[in-house]
Picture 1: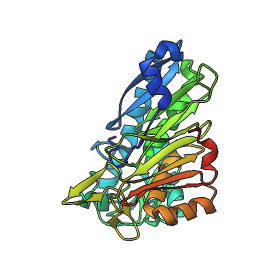
Picture 2: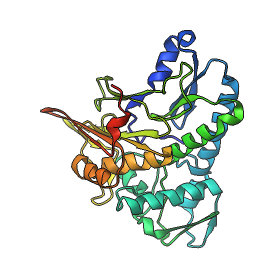
Picture 3: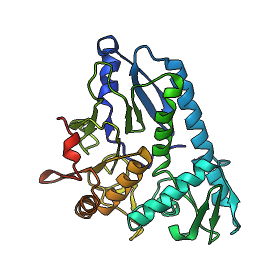
Picture 4: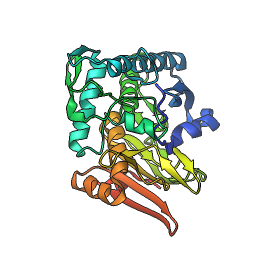
Length: 321
């Protein structure tokens, strides 16, 4: 599954350090391709890199086969092409992620919309074609999906990668790994502590495609960290640009100026969806929503008059620099 709709604006500081000085850091860095992006992990140096690579490859393959809009024969692609309004059998993971997408849509008042794929495609992003539909046109049961209109299509790119990261973290103890920092396409989850006893740390970049400068260092602990933004993924049109993020209320791209939202949540799947939704809401409305719902989030925006930040829901308690 290619996940190039999202703008991934942070890198794992622990993994970067272990790449440079693995012996001193007591860690080994491993990684590879995943979902049109990459995954990386910082592991204790005694961990089996081969076992971790095999486990990650297995999770990525399973999620691709269930949820990739880029694979013609994935479960999601087959469902999207089907014209039937009857229930269609699907795997438990696809049903789980689809149900979470619907819950996220309800929770955010439609700012997260798993049926937005055709609109995204019309602006030059993503492979999904179809008619305009609404999340309430989709029904989910334990092992099946149903559409109420034949043109409905499902787009889970906003949370499927987070689900895959959760699965990877859950799978690490089975391959003998009790501590790790894992980054998948820019999203972070950790397990245990760094071998030297300190918490794992991640660096959040400034929302500027050119700078590559870290705005903050965060210790997420048991929380997942996800970022959505407009700093990199957009189509250039003259002096402006068209963002890949679509506001379902207007069916138009959000402002393409450099901006990002970083979110902490109990799971990467939830953090993934919330980051997208809050970014679509915009800095002021999104920050108000996050504060009202006690969501730890960092909103950043670069304007002509400089940079602006808002932290909500106790996000500052996780910031170490």
